[in-house]
Amino acid sequence: MSDELNEIVKNITQPSVWIRMLLMTVFAIAFYFVLLPLILTLSIAQALFTLITGKCNANLKYFSSALELYISQIFKFMTYLSEVKPFPFSDLPEVEDDSLQETSAPKKTNKKTNATAKDGVGVSAASTVVAKPAVKKKAATKKAAPKKTAKKKALKKAAILEEIAAEYDVSDS
Image (cartoon, rainbow, N blue to C red; front, side, top):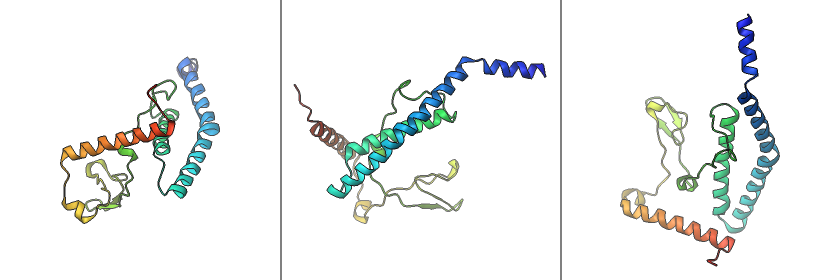
């Protein structure tokens, strides 16, 4: 019994455990008082933009995507799924352009397992079904050349950067 007690005392006296618990408490408080109101504000702002302009604001969409990755990083740290300390102790996670595209992926059924999946979620790794966005029949018969796809992505990135620059009135001075 004394070996078990010594092991418990050893675990309790490790500073790394106490530092992690302190960081978890700080992140939990920040999540409650900062991030949850920010999520609510973003939701309302995006809804207003959609009502007024008929489309989502690209800047808010990008920020929301980055915020979602950051919250995921915090969640993984707080639940011991990751040892990586979230921002400001590490870099902010980067947002991929693919995550910003609007897709309404239909649910597909895997015939082997009779499981439904949206983007492969909920299906075993051996038989993952990746759902593709709905495509018109004309577009489905034509396949874009890889160069055209790369050009489209580059043009889309340039358009987003121009929109951001215009919104913040960035000049070369």
